[in-house]
Each structure stands twice: as C-alpha cells, then as structure tokens.
Image 1: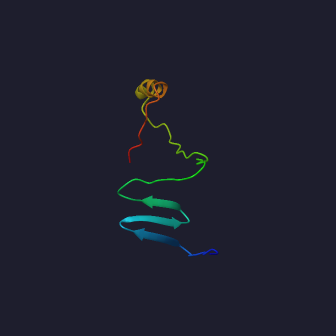
Image 2: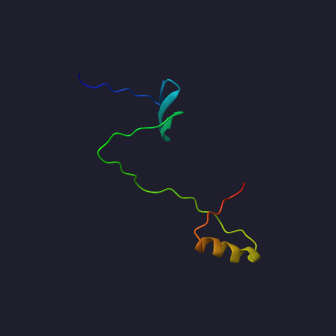
Image 3: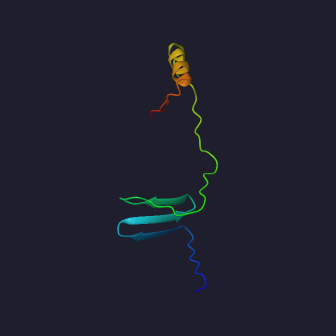
Length: 79
C-alpha cells in the first residue's frame, strides 16, 4: 500500500457525518456529537497546562481564599 502524506501551511480539516478532525499549529481538535473511541495499547498524557493569576483580592478576602485553597476549591477568574 505505501503511505500518503498530506501537508498544509495553515491547517487541515477532515469532516465526515458531522464529526471532524482539525490539525493546525495550535494543536489537534476533535469534534463530534457522539463518542470518541481510542483503540491503542497505551495512551499517555504529557505535561500540564496552567495559568497564573495575580491575587488582587481585598485583604478581607484572603481568609476566604486560604480556606478555599485548603479545601481544593476552584477559584474562577472573571473578566
């Protein structure tokens, strides 16, 4: 059979039945209305992503923030 290589300078999008795979310099995006099945021997999730935010809360809120952190609550940044 051989192999086929397709290249694009910006992105490649495959669409079938409403589901899609988009490949670009930003990453790989999968979209579907149903399940995504991965059939593989091993799947690895590499690294983490994070966003650092500045603590701009009034001093009265620091106790609440500390209590939330100890309970592993999520603090949401509002824009």
